[in-house]
Length: 253
Image 1 (cartoon, rainbow, N blue to C red):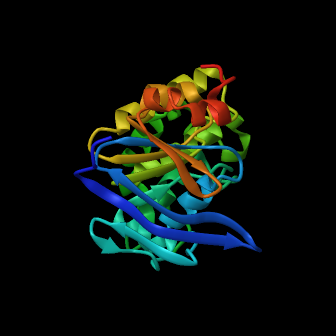
Image 2 (image 1 turned 135 degrees about the vertical axis):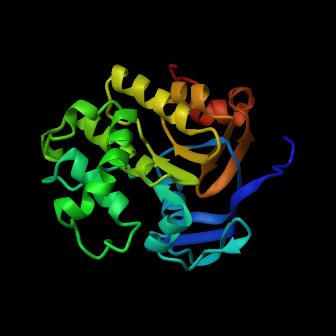
């Protein structure tokens, strides 16, 4: 593979352990500007831990995270998000008793001087209505804007979380299993949404659905026990005997 020439985000020799289990083992990766980069591997490979460290939700035991040449290893999650690195979670992280629209508006509000209040008055937050609606529309939730989040079906909750991330206009978007538990229709819509978002930004995608990876991702990194087993294009991974034996041999696309 050619070297990445426009690296926007990278890890250098990351180590992260939990109670004696090493989730990241001297992991060094580069993520290029304008690419969709998949991270795949079995449970326990370190995929979600990597996203947690990249987004400031976890601190590594050693090593560095570098964003556009600046070391952000010790920045907290809020600071990392303000820099332009935004993540979604494998488990829903919406406010369950607020409407879909208000959930997105809170994300927009967090980027302003209103951020200290959970949800400011309607008049104060009206400035976010158009942007919030645009984010909901982009994931097919415009008609559900008034629904309380807890009342939405699971697939729509995942779409709402994606809308919340989109609304923050990230430079780097970290997605943890964005299609998990979705119907085929919801998966198709989510893939289309991510494809529309990709130009001009970097997307790091943890995903078990290899059809999604094949369709979206220009680069694939396979993790095993916190280290890189293989790295390259999807087709190169399909042709790598180690990857086929370990993960892809019986996969359906």
